Length: 617
Image (cartoon, rainbow, N blue to C red; front, side):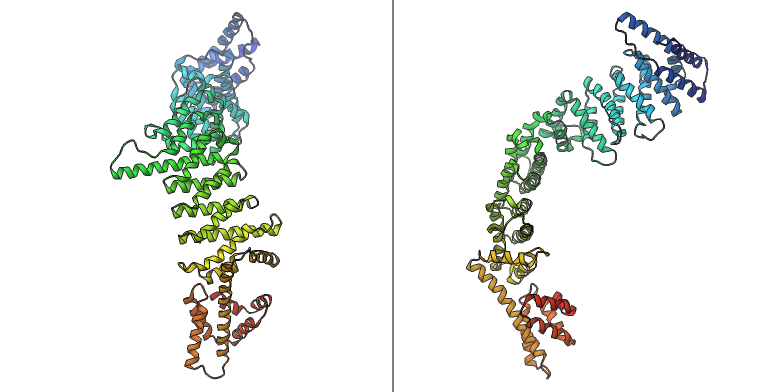
């Protein structure tokens, strides 16, 4: 041990003690010298108790004047930030070289720790010139386990403040060594004593959204739970179990974020939650009030129960989303109860379960859970509630679209049957979804990923059969014609590919399909015939008679019946008849006389006026 260094430190302290009111410049100069000298002293490493006591005695004697001067001049609470930082550096060094004894009497330690916390509050700014000095203080405090002393002197309020400070200043860009020191200080406290207030702070930061600084705070909270899992488990599990089984008895505001907390803990310390799996299972089943209340109160209670089950379903769904948790295998009873929610008495719960099934199957299509979820989704296609059936159609189609190659024909057949649903809204949604699916299938065939197969080609066949739905004008043959003509194939699919699909699906036609397609083509033929009659009347040199006008009107009515909106179509035909530009009618004649679609399409591109009429119709 360098005696000259000890003498220098003692001299600095003596000089400061003799001054009645040292100014800032004197303080900064003296404290800088003291910090430099203190940092050169190593902590006593002798093993013999007597020898160590002798060394500590020398250190205490050498540093006592400086420690007394800090107390005398109230430097713990000095108004200047630079002075306080240097004092904190001295304090940190005192803790280091005098450990395990505190460097100050208990009555001063509260001010000591308030000073240290004020330094910690500045750790967020890593660009500050004094950042490295603050990091050094943090490192020293962590290594010496100084903050545990706060428990001994009943500074629980400062401990709580310190935890809040750490969560507020930690940043993603901080070096891991800094974060480790913060984690060490917090872990030392928690391994000694856990309070509900500290648990609230940790769990509250655990579920913070990832914005600005809170991503690092959430990760810090997760690291604390991991490192202190054994100590924290009884408290966390007790809190979560109370939230699950009797939320009203929980005083913490975090009770409303119970499901988010469970999910986050599952991600950082899944073994901790083994104890609450039974309560999570029961939460999926909650359907009964504790008493039979008045009708209005009963409705509120039932709504609360439905909300609770929906939240529980969404939570389990998110857990299943992560294959590494192996929820279905490790917690089979929980998974079985989750599957039962697909048949829950509440349609809202059934819809929530279907949405979870979609997310799970899309995330892990080949997982064991997905196979069981397929069955549950298929069962909901026949649900008595049309909203549930509609959701089941959406989910089933999206699942198949994500995995066309390995989907069973039976599954496809089940949801395409919803094109015949008794509810028109379900039929419409089914039509939209199966058309999306068929277009995806056509793209995959064109890319060579899959081959043409019957169970997908049955889709346009079943769409054709909608022509027989007499209870819905949206499914009249003229509407289905537009679906087949404009929505069946992807826009950029080559003609050769379209032809391949048409040839294959023709091979699947029954007499009913032929009849439906014939009705559509006959309708188109009628429009063509009536348009020829209209143009022939227009070419008469003499003025059109009232009888001819009646024929025109009759043609308009017949042609309009072939359009989705007959009244609008008839109005457009009237406007067409009033036009004086004979080029338009010449163009229409050309279109009607063309034998091939290719030639007709070419001429359509030449005559923009004709195209405008077509769009209006």
